[in-house]
Length: 325
Ligand SMILES: [Zn+2]
Image 1: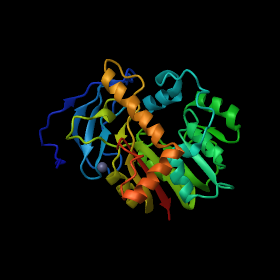
Image 2: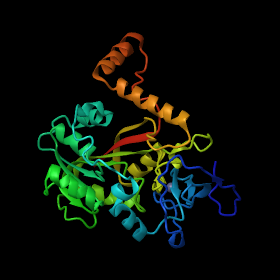
Image 3: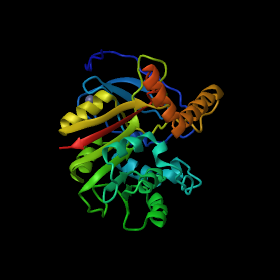
Image 4: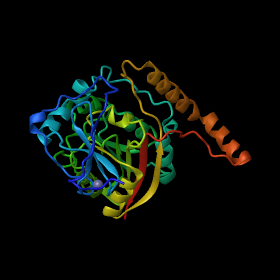
């Protein structure tokens, strides 16, 4: 549909922000880049509110920012990410795990690793530790890696110095290389070189180990619902299920789970009460649908009426589990 031809003229549409958190990139040090997944040249289609351009790659079906901020600008940005950009106030919020299986991702993981005892998990980009807490509550031995030094200091108090590492897979002191599962939740959309991140993560997995990816799904660019491009403006690429398939083929991985579900979380949206209300209603519905009673109810309803359970409506995110061969 989109010709990858630099002679083609196209209109670049400007998008408003649906967030107050707009990164202030150093626009004098931007770098051109090809598609960070397949290295083909994409077509510029959108101007994001942080003044960066979104290009569409028709080869692996993803969207990406180009020109992009420099590596050094990104290192500075992520060193104090939670405090300066996310403006996280209460770092202890969410410390109580009620039931980790309320998160559908954990139910999928449990279906593939049913005995957590002795299974080692690395959560890359753990941020506020909610995934680490859930996986620990499920009985896994958890390790966390994050470039945010302040997030690491807080996490060490809860999980111990031997479980938390600051930096990246390239430069941290983490030496373990036989993880059963590595989770990349809200991570692969951030780095300049997601394929390098994939390669490094896979080098830390044992044979048959699992890599779980959770990332925003690229919106339908023919529609006028482009929320993914209007919030979380630090994202540098937007994947699709086709992109996941491309990545799996590139690294010779088995796709053992792939789904699109969910709705955006827009906590600081401004001047748009209707969308905020919709977002709250969607979140509340999602919570109720994940209650054990409703899961059982939907299962029975499915058996009785042969209908499809609807506890994973929406398509805002991609959740994929890839297995190393
Ligand atoms: Zn591509």
